[in-house]
Image (cartoon, rainbow, N blue to C red; front, side):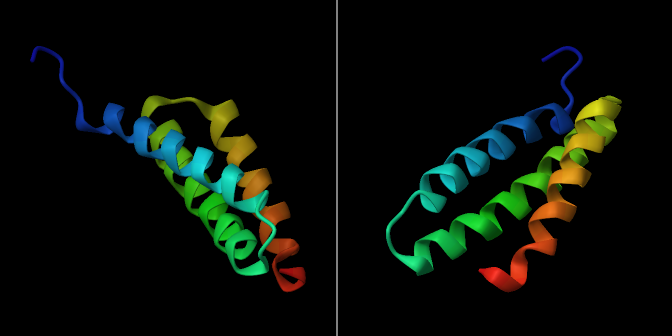
Length: 77
């Protein structure tokens, strides 16, 4: 494949983890909601890695901000 860049594939697991996280935080059971929270944090890391490589600085800034606000709320989970 011409111009293939393995980093470009990182956006797909990032998207999948984000969707799973959104589904889990809507669960009725606290344990599933907690897993959803940590999945969101993992998706932040994946999006930051992809955005950094791709030069998508607004996405990186957004994900850093979301990660900070999520981790600030971590004690409540």
